[in-house]
Amino acid sequence: MPGPARITLSSFPTTMDPLSLILIFMAVGLGLIVAELFIPSGGILGVAAAGFILAAVISAFFISPWAGLGLLLTILILAPFVFSLVMRVWKNSRAGRAVILTGTTPTPEKPRAQLDSVGTTTSALRPMGEAQFGNLTFEVIAELGSLDRGTRVRVVDYRQDGVAVVRPA
View 1 (cartoon, rainbow, N blue to C red):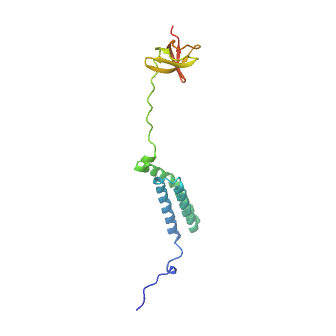
View 2: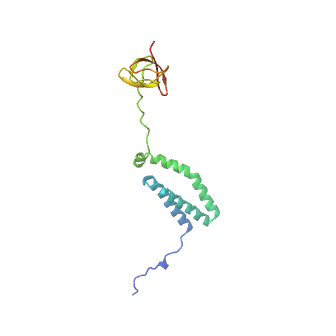
View 3: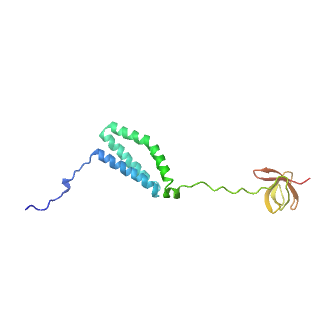
């Protein structure tokens, strides 16, 4: 009776079919691209994915120059479309929503002193200072010269750097 079958390393093929190698490199590269979306690696997985895809292209060139060129052009043409599709799907996933910033909340509009409203300066205006209109205090600019604290002022204009005021007539 013969003994159990012995399996040795020499019974396995030592070379791989180039087409299988290309498919494995592409699958690993695409898998790493997908993993890059969900695992924060600082781009390491993306660089590894690019390396595997480049290895697939190089392997295709070993089959024939036309196969390598065809795979390279296919990747270059399809990459933008695949990228946009992946981003569209990813931004709607739970991980994508956690990473991608949504719109900003609008900042509430600051109250403005009414044009022609009268108030009192709370600091000296040389030419810039503060004035109170009702119960609100604004940064104001004196149109002409400087004004002392406690002077009554009237709003005449809105500027980028503050509210322009003058002494009421």
